[in-house]
Length: 110
Length: 356
Image (cartoon, rainbow over the protein chains, first blue to last red):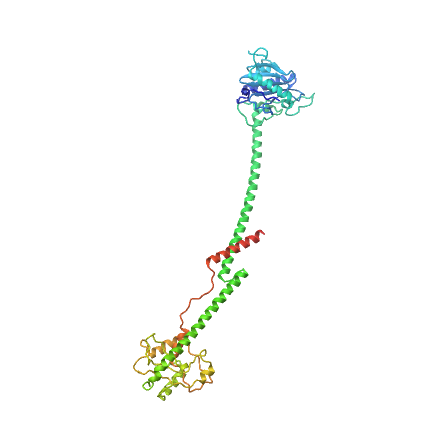
């Protein structure tokens, strides 16, 4: 049972993406479709053991029922987690850079 | 560019959160499952955009998933607006249905209340009308009212009879009192009072003068002596009295009245003293007797020579009988509290009959 989450992690900050981050996510998804990534979902509203105020983006590969990567953003930092590997890949100060860890996109699209 | 790894620097809160979420996902894989199963392998997956929760600013709406529409992908707020509009429409429809149900229920209740109120008003009106006509829909109450009414009528009749008897007794007592002095001074009283004979009493007016003039020492019949109405204490011993058979059937039956001897009319000792100071004999004959009913006719089998009743006697007796003070009618009328209680009982009975 996981219940030892620090209280600071559940800080009541307003989650969500800015318009620029949303547009970049759409462009990245279009660009990453060729690499087998077909969808991204907001997993923040899932029944986590504790209330989550951070942004949680699940990246799905085509044909997989579960997310392959998690992109977690909080306090201006974005962390990329590989579910299959079971560890943190990187922590970056912006969403485009965090998405680039999963699938780099051409500079022309960004 | 800041890129940290768990081994290089101490973990940031976001990394702690990432590891925490990863452990949770390993314990419950459903936390990372797709919202819907995608197309089978080999087919092109429908591109999905970022859910609504990643928009800028707070959002209370559930994540809206956009389809493969290109325009929708370019404008995700449109589908959100559409979903909001659809949800609002459904809520409005539900609210309208609920309002209709409540309205129908309220209308039925109001109709029921109106019906009950109308029945109550009708029952109250009927009870009032029946009470005013002394008719009650309650048999027991009707019986009680009839019994009370009968007792009242019986009491009234008893009072009437007592008055009649009392007047007769008073007449007889006055006759006895007037008889003694009249007999003592009969030698000097020989006045015929023809003026007292009313025109309305033909037998008395035709017989009395002849008899009075031929009897120097008259004898007085007790039953026939009726004093004239005098103020109490003002009647002298030689007050003129009238004598004669009582023409009233209740006092004497026709057989006894016919068997009475011809009693002469004895007048007062002092011819100059008026019988009634305020009323002259003529006025009395023309006013008092005109107001009362005419005396009953004498029996046909009576002797024609018998004198009729004197005017004063007739007047007095008839005053005693027919000039009684009018008593107020003692009709039975239910008191207001009793009437109200009856109305309430009727209303309750009607309401009870409606609901049961």
